[in-house]
Image (cartoon, rainbow, N blue to C red; front, side):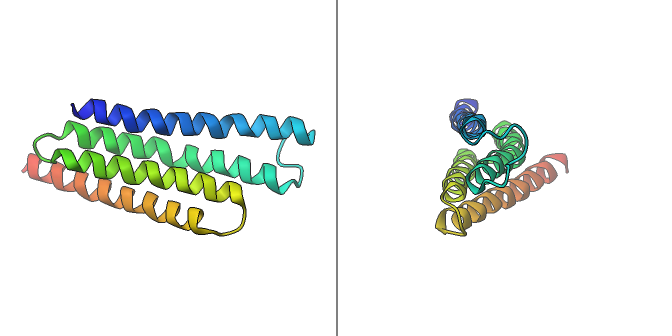
Length: 133
């Protein structure tokens, strides 16, 4: 049951990465830019949205998977808290970055992503220490 929950959150995050990845070459073709952003703000935001997601999602999914394996040290709700905060944070951040300037999506997405990492880090340290001692 735990790995099925991880699979749901992982699936959504992987599809988000794929969506963000597909936006970049489309904008490169549209703006006739083969490398970099060509000074185009929309293309720069698309590149950074994909890059930012690529930086955070893999580590988040590793943490989420480890939490799922640490039964009974961590309760089932911990898997949902970690997965939901990571996923919602990544979706909000991507939407906010696509919109442009500093906005609610970027701020809330960053905060939720950091909260998920803090929660996962603390939960994994707790579970690891309680099982190892």
